[in-house]
Amino acid sequence: MKKYRVAMIGVGNIAQSHYRMLSAIPDRCEVIGMFDTSAEQLEKRHKEWGYKKFPSQEALLAAKPDVCWIMTPVQPRLKILEQCFAAGCHCLTEKPLALSVPDAEKAVELARKAGKRLFVGHNQRNIPDTYTMGKLFFDGVLGDLIKVYFHHYIQREDQFWAKKFNQPDAWRLSFDMCGGRIFEFSIHGINFIQWIGGQPRWVYGKNDAVSPTLGKAGLDDVVSAHVAFDKGYGVNETIMAPGMKNRRVIGVVGTRGECWLEGEKVRVVVPSEKRDELIDPMPCPDKAESFFQSLDKDEPPINDGLAALATTRICCAFNESVRTKQVVHVS
Image (tube, rainbow, N blue to C red; front, side, top):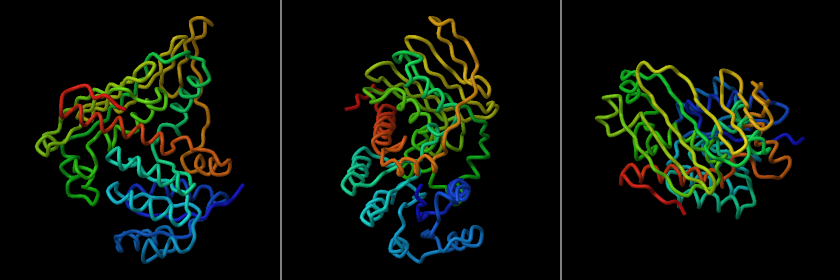
C-alpha cells in the first residue's frame, strides 16, 4: 500500500476531526504541511500538531503533496480545488462541495480533466450503522426501494445560537455563506438518502425556526425535505430545539423487507424469509482510510464528485422549494 503525502488547507475547528483521522494512520499518510489564511490559526495548529506551516497555498502545493485535504469554508473552495488539481493532487474536501449546481458541476469537471480523484466529506457513508443499511440494500436483501428516511433530532437552546454569532465560525449562520441548515447540517442525511435512492427527480421542502435568535436572522433550525427518485422516495428531517432528545431515526424500506437503526444495532426484517433479527453494524473505514483505499485501487471513492453533485442538486432544490412553496423538479 502506498503512503500518501498530504497537504492540509484550512485548519479551523473542523480540521481537528481530520487531524485525528490522519494521525491515527501514520502507515498510510504523512502530513507534509498545512496552510491557513489566518496566521494566528496556523501558528496555533503548528504548536498543537507540529506540522510544518507554509506561508501560502502556492508554497504548500510546490512541496508536491499527493493529496490535498481541504477544510476551508465553502466560498473559496472551487478556486482552491482548481489550484490543487492543477498541481496534480487528488482532493478530499469538506462538505458541501458547492452552494450551487453550476459550481458543483465545475468541481466535478476539474477533477475529470485533471484525471484525479475527488472525495467529499459527508459522514454517513462511513459510519458503521448507516454503512450497514446501505450494504443490506445494495446486496439486494431488501428488494427495490420504497422509502429511505433519515431524521436527526438535536437539543439546542436559543443561547447556543446567540453565542454562535460571536464565534470565529459565525459564517455558518449566514445563509449566503453556508446555504442554510440544509447545506450546513442536514446535508449528511440528504447524502445518505441520495446514496440509497440514486438520482433525484423532484424535491419538496419546508423549514422553520424554533430559536427566536435564528428566526430574527432569517435562518432555520427545522428542516423537512421530501425527495422522489426513479424508484421510491426519501425523507430527511432535522429538528434542533430545546427539550429534544439527541437521536437519529434512520431506515430503508424495500419491496422484500426493511431495516432500521435500533439502539446501537440494525434491525433487519424480511417477511418472505421469516427473518427478524438485530445485527451488529459492519465495520467500515473512516473517510481518510476510505479515500486512500480508493486511490490504491484507482476507483471512485464512496462519496465522489458525482455523488456530491447529486446531493447539491437536492439541497439547492430544497432552498428553491422553500422560497417558492412549490415542488421543484431536478434535471
